Length: 421
Image (cartoon, rainbow, N blue to C red):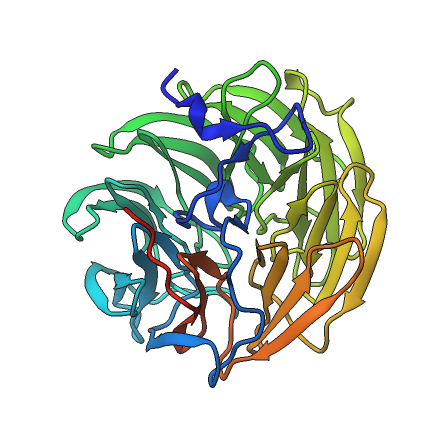
């Protein structure tokens, strides 16, 4: 087996059908270790702002690409004002100093008003940083060394969507994995991380473009598999061959809601949400045991109420937490979907996915507010921090710093604590 089992551990609650990525200081993909949104750091500040707790801030160009961090370096994507370039920027985590930038040519294209030409996030490991660029017509995956040396480029072909692109790759040992769901075409692609060669492509049921980033899951008696969610439902794929191993078709999704938030794996369930612009929402929780098509047997619960469309959810113990698009925070029981509490945080629109660190939830809103809550079955708002910026990208954290990308600046809050590397 090419994956090291040492990277995996059963959750503290003894969940027998899901796995948890071991805690790490780095934040090497969208939403951090295995896309959980959960950080090992316990020292992030609760109260901060332009005048307090600010370690540094640097100007940024346009883009909603969320920062990722590996080995003391930050990576994110931008686009210049006329759309003629996409840029991968690398900054030093300690002070925000730019270490290098690489350009890829592009053009203007139609995107959702809240999206951008540079919305996808990078995936990083010790050998490479991988970024998926959209030039306005086609998608391509580019790999660079940590020092910015080009390693390889792999075109993925045309991309079609009314909202533009915003996909983020996943790095798993020697594979780069991309869920390429667009209008009318859907597939999962695996590339060799060293060469960029295509290892396999697996077609999926195509509906409309979806933007959820896949996660890895270990189901009973199975090696780690890739878990993907979309308008069609959810499925797992064998990492070596790309063969589909398990699936649940979302038959009740009659309005063809798209998935943007990443899936949540907890308590033996995959929980995922879909939505649309008019305000329709739907959430499904599906049991992860079994093999093959489990459509008729494995739905645990489903609801149309309160859950988020764009922001991803978080799990802690038996509870799941979220701040939805309308700025309402919620806590629910993961196994049943039963509401524990909900509370409106204020007049705020939320697109960023929150992160959890030290048992606290950090949730940025578009209006520059950053809410900090306890991840607890008792509602407790710890702080409402205000930045002079607009925030759509999701936050990241590493080595004692909370990173928040606004429309005009990238901010670092806290105290830099470099580990022994």
